[in-house]
Image 1 (cartoon, rainbow over the protein chains, first blue to last red):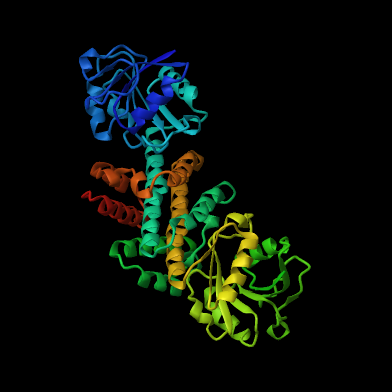
Image 2 (spheres, one colour; image 1 turned 135 degrees about the horizontal axis):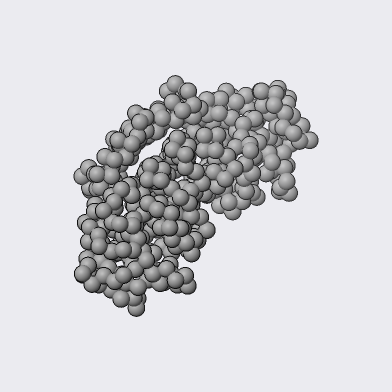
Length: 251
Length: 251
């Protein structure tokens, strides 16, 4: 059994707790967070760092800004201290004797169930024993555990912003436009699914379609006239320009 | 049997042909295109508009720019003349006695099979009988046929550019970044799928996460330093700004 302590009260901490709790290879011996949000479980909980127990792994699942403070409080612990952030380098934990990173590459919200077995987990550690321990922890819950360096993780995190945060915002903008024009956003869902499905058979470079790809200036002009919101106009222009640069079409 | 003629040699014409061919309620009596690309089928084919037969429906599946020319050549036909474009108003066909629109809302490429039954089809016609005919044609292949006005179709098409063309380009940019940093784009696929899956249970407004949503200036700064390409920098800034405007966070 790998003995872990989960620190944090956010979405990731919540899902780690739920997933680890039902796992037979992992024992959560304590949870800790400052906000006094007790997880609904029978696991010992504290808000007080002086009462923190001894564990194999301390998982810091807090906001990026809070990682240095939290790790400072674990400085005398012998166990492995890891953070879970995509953009924070492992070196931030360098004062902790044993340190590493346990990075689940997924978007987490409390309302949505997550099947951890399909979540890729990037692990990194200062020494081999710790790396093995993190791999074991990862393999206990996921089918896809990989060693990822801080530099690689940083790029993955930025890519994740592009393919998750930005695309989700485009879904939002599309939905707003549908609402304004009294058409159902549901009509777009098969198109959205197909766009993703194509990634399994075609590269997104080859799958690209649309006016900017074709260099179809008249449609782009119609669209820009149609858009009232200056902000959306800017998004439309910037992305169309980027597509046209990619395919060497002049707009 | 609804007798149709398909005009065009592009991706949509190809998929309409493939889908209609195996449908027992539809008979393709002829195909026509100027580029002499004969479809691989036993259906009579011509490049000559003077040899075009009489059909119930003439489906113009050509580029937007070519629609006026093609429809002009069908001006003496009594059958229903429809185009398939998202952004062209029905009125472009006003010289054709019976006219309408048959708009399948999906991305088509010759390499990828399309299950037409889940493709939403927006139909529009000048008169009721034609509208019924188009609905019958649509219902023969799809479970989701709806009457959509030219104005609504225009908004749907613009929304489709946002949720398909632009998101696909973001997948491309994410993939390029992964390649440059020697990490597998495959690692992002569960995240991409989850982003889409969430649309069934949450609004994209509520599902938004990431640094711009949180107003996390330090991560945004790190990302902008990380991006070398000016074009991508502009996309990152524009979309982050739009997210922050949406949620009232100052960046």
